[in-house]
Image (cartoon, rainbow, N blue to C red; front, side):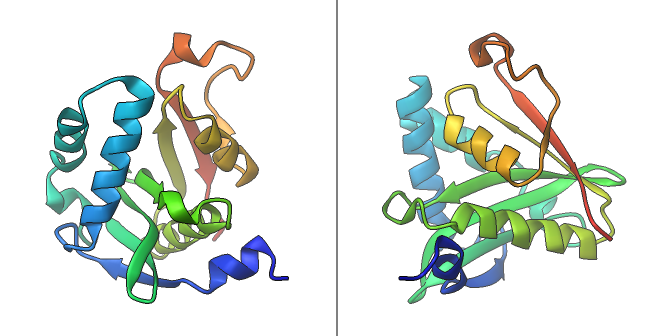
Length: 167
């Protein structure tokens, strides 16, 4: 039986432009997920996802990465410039049919490696209080919470994390 890390390795990592049509699945699923968890209409959640200027996710300051299996996106994410030395992760996603396979860890590793190649020294990200799986993913990947883990996440709303990149 393959390990979850082994399963994650079967997906091909590809850099894509922010307007790549394959990102449609990512946006649709993220909007549906945010709508379900936070009670916002899916259309509003989708608009908020795509309203960022595409240029923020293009080289040299940003990147989008998709993991593909048989040409289909199964996971992905992006980063953009937060400050001169810090990349901000956005749009971390795993297709609902492909969760619990280590794909989220692989997306983080791919984004961290690319951010380091681009000269960033650290990563910053936020997740929402109703995404405990994301919080656990970031903690397991070595991200340091910038909030009190004992506090009620709903009282914080945006849960920020940081991680220093290895050089």
